[in-house]
Figure 1: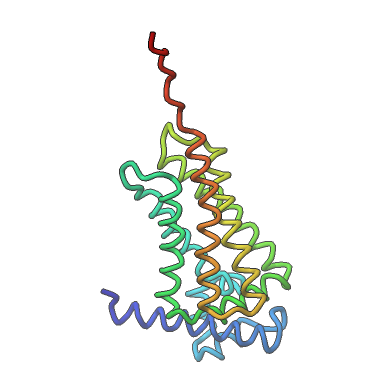
Figure 2: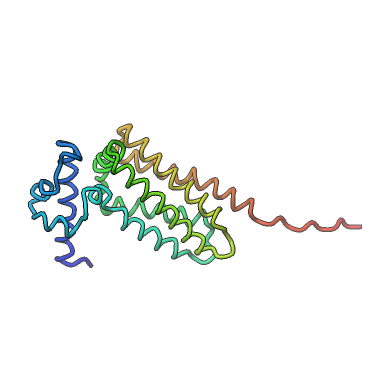
Length: 216
C-alpha cells in the first residue's frame, strides 16, 4: 500500500510534469525556465530539483521506471515460456500499467510529449539515446532469460521488431489524432503483428524430426 508521504510525492511529481508541458506548449521549450515550471506547480525551484535534474528529464519522466518494470518482467520468465509469449506478456503488461497509472487519460500528455520530442533537437537526441540504450539492455536481458536457446543477434532482432512496431504505431496514431481507445487498440494490434514474426522464428529454429527408414 502506498503511504501518505509517497502519494504526496507522486502528486507533486505529476504537478511538475503537467505544469512543464503546459508551459512548453504555451511559451516554447527553450523559452520556459525551471523557475517558471516550479512556480506554475506551486513549489520551489529547490523542490523541482529534488524530482528532476533538467527539463529533459521532465519530458521523459517515466522512461527509467518503465524500463525497470520491463526488465523485471523479462527476468521473471515462466518455465518453458516461448519467447513470443514472454514478449506479448511484457509488452501487454507495460500498456496495462500505463493505463492504470495514468487513469487512461494519458493520450493528451503523450501527444504533447511526442510533439516536443519531434521538434526540440535536444529532446530528440536524448530520446534516441535512451531508446537505443534500453533496447540493448532488453536484448541482453532476453538472452539471459533464454540461456543456450537464443543468441544476442536473435534477441536484438526480436526486441527491435517489437519496440519498433510499438513506437512507430504510437507516433502514427498520436499524430493522426486518434482517441485514447483507438491508440490502445492500435498498440495491441502492433504487438500482435510483430509477434507473429517471432513465432515464425521459433518454428524455424525447431530441429526437424529425424527421417525414419522406409519399411521393407
